[in-house]
Amino acid sequence: MQSGVETALAEFADIVEGAAQPAGPGDGDRWRVYWVLGRGELVEGRSLDALQAAYRVGARVAWRRFARVARRAGIGADQVVLLAEALFAHIDEISAVSVRGYAAAQADKAGAQGRRRHHLLGRIVAGAPASALAQAAVAAGWSLPDTVACVALGPPAERDRTHRRLPPSVLADLDAHDPYLLVPDPDAGSVLADARLAQALAARGAVIGPTVPLPMAADSLRWARTLLSRLPTADACGVVRCEDHLPALLLLSDQPLVRLFTDRRLRPLDDLTPKQSHRLATTLLAWLQSHRGSAPEVAERLAVHPQTVRQRLRQIDRLFGAVLDDPDARFELEVALRLRLLSGEAGPEEIT
Image (cartoon, rainbow, N blue to C red; front, side, top):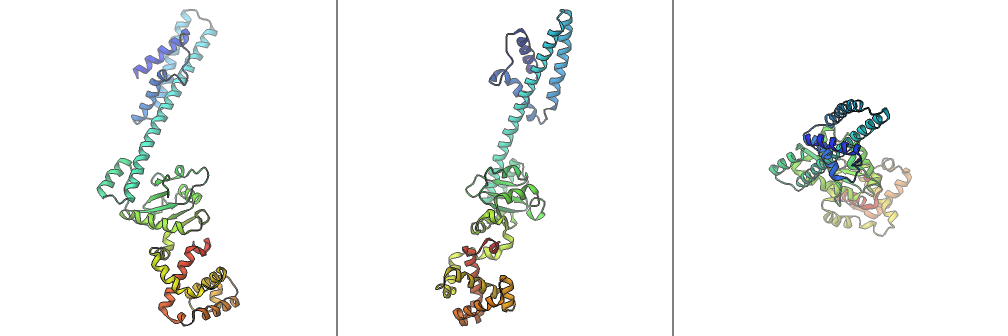
């Protein structure tokens, strides 16, 4: 602090004498003491208010002394005004450099904190031991929650600013090939209800994984990514919750096995055109899911005319025959049809 005062006075004297010009942005050595003073305020945990007040008080004290000397020396009013302007311009320059030093310290702190949070997130999804997570959490200034939900994100929009809109409790890896977030204690509601998070997710499209204990964070992320990969386009579907699609996730967990009996059970549809096959598949699934299986009930589910459903059901009966009377076969048919619709034949509204 003493060095700063001495440097400020000496530089101002040189400027008044004409031996020096006011420091410019390129004069790094001359700015350094003020830059360090600003940075030191953040390191000490203070705002810039005290330092800026000290600059202002120093300028007023110096001006009162300069004015007394000017009167004794018989300096004219015009020269005194120029002296005052030079003094306060000098203080403004010093203050501006201290502000930049303070901001640089903030950026360094945020960068270091961001790296520690990123490291913590990686350890969590990697299933690190509890002791290692506790240590990383302390370093990152983040409290370990009991439960978490991972969020798989869609591709960023142009000029994406997701990171700026995230609540501070949310950990994020937006630079990964498959970007994702980790939300602490999602069932508490406060984080997922945060307007900033809602806007960020809606802007990119996202799948929110199931709420799980902290050690199962990797599973939540895996399920969220699995469902995200099956959506036609993430941005078209907005925000999707895995909790609403757990049966679909179960079907997708062992696709080769499910596909094996899918090919077998849906073989009667192979000779139809893709459009015909899709219509009969959706009608058959609606019939299997309906309470009584009547044409009006299925028609209501599909939003088509009952007569259209009757025609389709007669065709389905011809194709599948007695298989439709076997409970085990009906179960396998429903699984097969669900998987087929999840695999790309359904539109966004049918999946979400």
